[in-house]
Length: 435
Ligand code: NDP
Image (tube, rainbow, N blue to C red; front, top):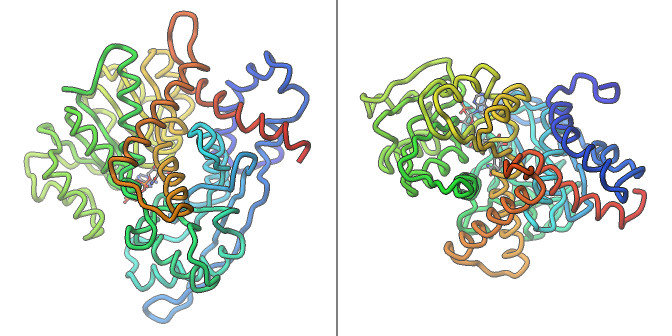
């Protein structure tokens, strides 16, 4: 708190990790007296910069850009860029800290980073977004590279933004390299990357349910968000026999008791990805569904909840409501959507609970596979990437079980993910000396 005042999200992420990792360090002599956690909470470096650009009216606009290079013990920095008006140092530091553990869990050689800007792409023209991305990359290009730091997308940064960022990097550096992931298929992208975070979260859910001899068939699923992660979580859950009944955005949620069929989901993708509209528009086409403004979808009856929008979007009261409604499983698609108080409610109720650093690691894993394909100058088939993604999610699940199970057989996935993520980074840091 003393070193990081006014950074509540960062402190929240650190507390969650410290509560599980400190007891582990106390039991393992090799990790003692090396200041390992203390070193891990201090970023390797943070770059903060001005992003000036011109809007369509010819007015100059100024935003603040960031890149947190958190930890490179096990590989080049890797983590997304977020463009959202709420972006600040605390949020990006929490994301970069989580990313370090997540990337370690994937088994791939990637360090942790995160970045972005307090720029709001909503309501901006394509040309404005392009000029912003070009200005942002003009500074960022000095600090990243295929072997140094490889950013990807996150909230507000999808295929369109990655394309503009890549174009500007190439123009400035005269290098066609895998410096960004989430690229389009015509210029070095990987099949299944857009789907990977949502699909991976559903594969992780399958693994958790399997520990109880259960599966997704017939399950009612409540999903928040309607962006990249939410869309593909909904798609895969439906393919595996579940019924998805909600999606949301920052203005409210839709409840479709009949289930969001593939045809309805295609319409959601059109509204969000092409028309760049609001989820409320869903009910104009499907009047049997309800739109509830200014609320989150956690009061509906569901077996599985998948928060896929943003941090701290499940409160203690909402967690109690979910448990009271019979929810048996919570899988985080977003990063840290569950408050610490809500997490305690789920753990007390012995609900299957997957923390984002384990369950949403499919996205960065597939980014790692995109990097491998770029280095090999080869493209794998969708089936091949999907098989590797499934294999990675299964192995992350196994690591959580290995480090998170107690004598009764209960798996604390938060503890399992934190310790498994910590061990690999800590071993690399120990080997590399006091740096
Ligand atoms: P998108 O920008 O595609 O979608 C974000 C969705 O969340 C939108 O529906 C958006 O609604 C909603 N949302 C954003 N901010 C808020 C807010 N403050 N309050 C309520 N709703 C909000 O982002 P992604 O789907 O890529 O990311 C969603 C989450 O998943 C984030 O936590 C991200 O860090 C995490 N994640 C993403 C990965 C990826 O590969 N994309 C990988 C791993 C984690 P609106 O349109 O109204 O803003």
